[in-house]
Image: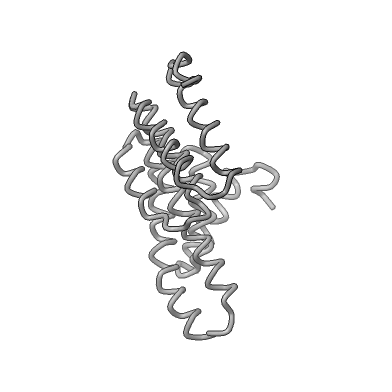
Length: 173
């Protein structure tokens, strides 16, 4: 409720209380990390999100053992873990640690999120002045992807990357 009202400072204080009271509640750490990241508290967000990953790894095993028929809970945990990895990459980027950001992105192993991960990689590369590498990554998606919509989107993103990198003349190529 507090985060929906954009009362992030109050929400963070409440979540810190929740995580102190029930430190094994993985979702509390995820939500806390997300809000800390929103408030540009990258170091705190990193700590919270890493705690979530630690707890969710054991929760995944416990959930699978408790209810083998409920694939949805396992899927939700995996989706939350992917979101945490993406946020950890964002936190590392906020801290200027591009190598760590790439390391977090490399841990996202989900074909449905490949374009999103590639877009974040391209953004990191452009910030480092590596525009050619960023566009090459999109080109690779455009040439290997079977979905025509994703191929087209990859080409558009490559063009935007060139423009953002100041290489407008190369867009037509």
